[in-house]
Structure formats: C-alpha cells, structure tokens
Image 1 (tube, rainbow, N blue to C red):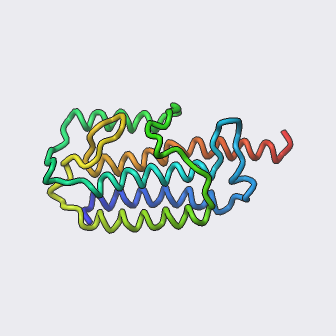
Image 2 (cartoon, rainbow, N blue to C red; image 1 turned 30 degrees about the vertical axis):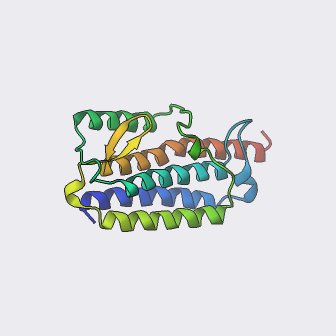
Length: 180
C-alpha cells in the first residue's frame, strides 16, 4: 500500500476504534436513546456511518479508469478542502442521499459489517495503482470529483463530524439517567 494511503487508512482505523470503544461500553438502553423527536439514537448513527463509508468505497471500487482517466486539479482540491472544513465545524447537514438514511441495526451485526468493510477497503488500497493517486475516482454529492486520498479524507472527516452528534446523544442520556 502506498504510504499516503496507509497513513489515511490508519487515521480511519483510529477514528473507528474511538467509536467502537464508545459503543461497546454503552448499555442497550443508552444505544437506543434518542435526544429528541426525529433525532437519531446511537445505533442509527452507527448505521449511517457504515452506509456512507460503504457507499463511498463501492463507488471507488467500481471506478473504471478506462472509462474516465482524469486527474484532479486545484478546483477539486479546493472543494475537497471546503468540505473538510464544513464537516469539521458544528454545522448540521441534511443527508444528501436517501440510500444513507439509517435503519436500526443490532450493534454486533453492525460492528461485524464495519470490520468486513474495512478489511475490503484495506485489501483494495493495497493494490491501488500509485500512478493513479491524483486521478478522480469518486464523486461526492456536494463537493464533486475527488481522488482516492480526498475520498479517504472525506470518510475520516465524516466520522469526525459525527463525533459531536454522538457526544450530544450521550449527554442527553446521562442527563435523563441522572434525573435532570
């Protein structure tokens, strides 16, 4: 695996480990707690994270350089950077694609799916052609075309973005549990 991809993949793994640690120490009641009407609980949040990662990876995995062999440029880098800053802020976003709207899943089933997905991603990145690192392989619904490094960066930023939401759910549960 190219060193740049290894670095990005390891960052993804560290962020995933944060979520897994938080999820494994939560009770069933805490995992199912929603801070309000029409708001996600932790299990719905987890399903959303996995769906976004899966959809991003499947797009990249199916990309055909024979059909489109185009380098990313300064414009794509700028849009990718704007997306990064937006996701790292406290801004809220509507889910841009209906296929990533979450559905409640069992924690262990979800974590197994996530492990399998990460294993597939790692295997794919191991064989990704280094001469194609700066070629577009993914189209984000808002930011547009991205290369593999930008796509992995988006996956990481998306996970970080939702840490705020996880903390909000946890605080809400703790307040209710404390009788506030």
